[in-house]
Amino acid sequence: MNLKPGNLKRSLLTGLILVFLSPVTIAEGPEITWDLKDALKQVDRQSDNFDTMMARAEFVRTDREGKETLRAQGTMFMSEKGDIRVDFDGDKPVTYLLYRRYLYIHYPRQNRVEEYYLSRHKGRLEPYLRLGFSTSGNDLKKDFLLTSLGEKDVGTTRTLGLDLTPESSKMREVIGRAQLWIDQASWMPAQQIIDSTQQGATLTVTYTYMARNLNLNPDLFKDKWPRGTDKQKMK
Image (cartoon, rainbow, N blue to C red; front, side):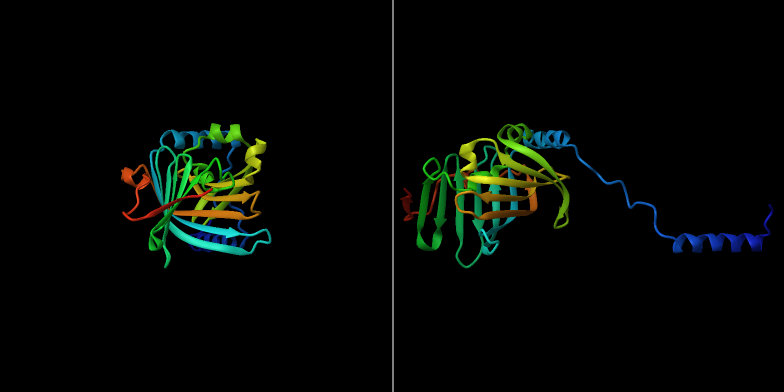
């Protein structure tokens, strides 16, 4: 069938109108789905290349009923060995230092630092902040029963969720379960959700402005405090 130029233009215009008025049937893009095994391989690659990390971190603690009991923000640093330092902001600044098997809490306004030997304080949740950073996918698979939680956005970050149930009874005495929401670009945690067994509380840590493998000052992770600081060993 031959169409005159005028009829051809009208036919094209009519077709375009029908396209725009018809329901959209074209997908916005392929949805990325991750096999759990493949996701753990990505976490392995990230941990193999992990040296240091610095990020802004928001800590929110809720009780058994879901009532918020703590909200604090600070700058978090992590070394290759999994040592962690968090400098919290606010009117009452405080520094947490997780060094090997010790936890130090420094209160600069009071010139006081508390020292916790973690073997005697097994209910502390701070060691579990290492999950997904210095721990490999194989470590997670060995220590936890893993299931996929699918995908969601944490802020503007597209993440993949992993549900972690501790395999050992000793670990279950500390945490009932944990969730890792992993950034699909960096394969480091964008958010950690940790349920405390002993306290019945939930700690949610959300990370932003994360940078990895920076040349951090080693003194950040040393048990060094201003002169005159009173160190108290907590029993």
